[in-house]
Amino acid sequence: MKKRINRYLGVAAALCLMMSLGGGVALARELTLDAALARMEAGNDTLAAAREAKAATEYEKEAAFGLHLPKVEASMRWTRIDEPIEIDLSSIKDAMGFLHGPNPISGSPGDPRLAYLPEFTMEVQDDTFVKGRVTASLPLYAGGRIQAANEAAASRVQEAGAQLRETGNQLMRDMVTRYYGLRFAKKVVEVRTSYFQGMEQHVSEARQLETQGMISRSESLHAEVARAEAHRLLKRAVRDQAIAETALANLLAVEEGDHEAITPVSPLFLTRELEPMDYFISAALRLNPVLRRIDEKGVQARAGVKAEKGAFLPKVYLFASQELVTDDLTMLEPEWAAGVGMEMNLFEGFSSVNRLRSARMQRSRVDHLSTQAKKDIATLTEKLYHEVVGQVEQHDALKTSRALAEEAVRVQTRAFEEGYATSLDVVDARLTLSGVEIKQLMAAYGYDVALARLLETAGLATEFNTYRNDKEQEVTF
Image (cartoon, rainbow, N blue to C red; front, side, top):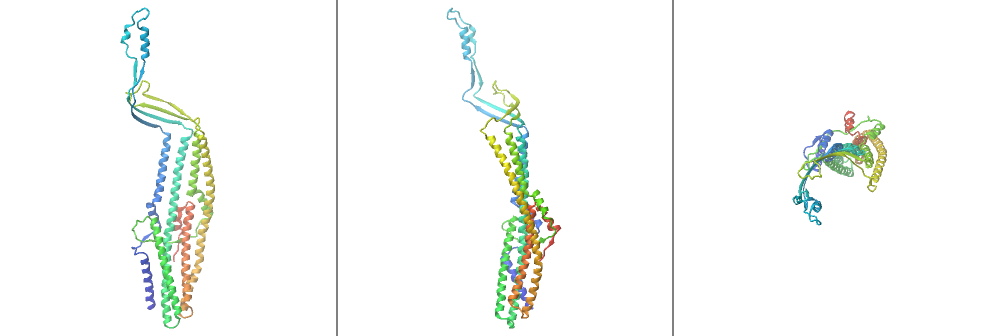
């Protein structure tokens, strides 16, 4: 009965410790991985920014398509000039007067009609006038520049889509890391709590044996030192759990001041049904968002070369204009006009030549980046694949060690109770068992994180739930 009471006291002490270190949090809220991912996708600002960036490129694509369509502009202008514009023909009147005026030799009178001639001046433009015009133009040929602009705009949409997928994949990997990180931390707290309870029971038994004279005082003190160390490890595990909770809450965009604890209920898992490594490398070379973004940069670079080549070719277009205000038009200005225009740069200081050279260098640069990125991605995929397989092997190898450690605890505890083993033997056996349990947890957690990174690199991040749900072998401790 006394042993049972001491055991209950140990459990109560551990629970009080966790509550005190946890800051008196409210009741825990259970959260599955699917629910956590859905909440992150709905509230994460980084993901929202990536979505808006893609939407912006789609509008840019629509704007580029508008280059194919007519351009219509309207303008209205009120103007005042320094003085009216007039055509002065007084010299013609003077010449006529000279020819038809009085003859200075004969004295005959001139033509009397000259006196009735008006002033030979004509106002062309008043000093205040209003001009209004509608103009329209339609490109017929631009040397391929319009097509290049549309190709580049469409490629930027694809690049933004790849960036959105990359951001989503990274956040999913972060969620897996933090979600299962909290699950791992809580499991470690359970292991440390069990170890602490075992040390509490060991101290109780040591004191009873000391009272009965079966062990020395040093043996009992050694048990108390081991209990203090177990207490320290438990406190550290609880602090690690609090840090993991904060990290997950930040990713879930939990509002500040919301101290409701989160309990991840989706278990750590392992699966041995994994496709061959070549499957993931092939998928990575086809689907990895980083490679897709680099490929789209290549499309844009080639479009840039096409556009710069078009700068050497003429631009042909239709145009038309209609005057909106005809009252202030001069005799030299038509009410409407239409025609065909052509523009072509003949010389601009070799700017076009150097821009074309720059575009070609950019295209070559992207090609080199693409080649190297494919090599790096393939190497990273292989590395992560081996990490996933290695974690499974580590977990399986620890099964025998755990069985041996459990048996050692049972044997050493029984031997200590009968006086055939020391307190140090019991402490070492329990410490070994808790260490093996934590290593198994670490292997399962490492597997889940490595699998998430492998699928992210292969462009298959959304397949994580397939491995977790369809092929799951739940790891329980």
